[in-house]
Image (cartoon, rainbow, N blue to C red):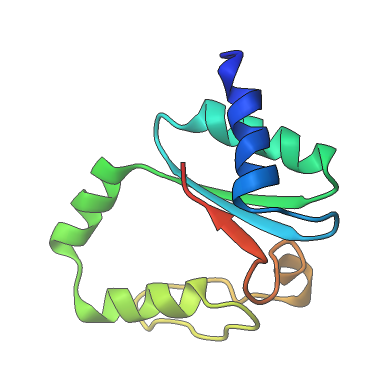
Amino acid sequence: MDPRIPALARNLLDYSLSLKPGEKLLIEGETGSEELVRGLIAESYARGVQPFFELTDPTLRRAQLLGAVREQFDLEVAWRSPGSVRWTPASTSWPERTSRNSQMYPQGPCSSSVSP
C-alpha cells in the first residue's frame, strides 16, 4: 500500500469528518480507488467506526445508462432504498429483501459519507 494512504485516511476520518466510535461511514468509490477504500476501511475499524462501501465502474454505469428506460430507474431506486423493499417486476424475478439480508446493510442514512 502506498504509505501516504493511511495518513490521508486518518486526515479524512479525524479532521474532515470527525467520526466517533459507533458511527457508520459509507465509502463510495470508482474503479481505481480500491487502495484508498481499503485504507479508509482499516482506519475506520481502528476508530470503532462501522464502514460500508460501494465501488462502481463508470464505464459500466455509462453503458447501462445509455440503454436504460424509466421503469429501470424506478426499480433501481426502489432496490437501493433503505428498509424493507417488496417488488417483483413481471419480466424478472428479483429476490425480496428479507430480515436476514436486510441486516447486512445499514438501516437508514449513514452518519457520514466519503467519496474518494
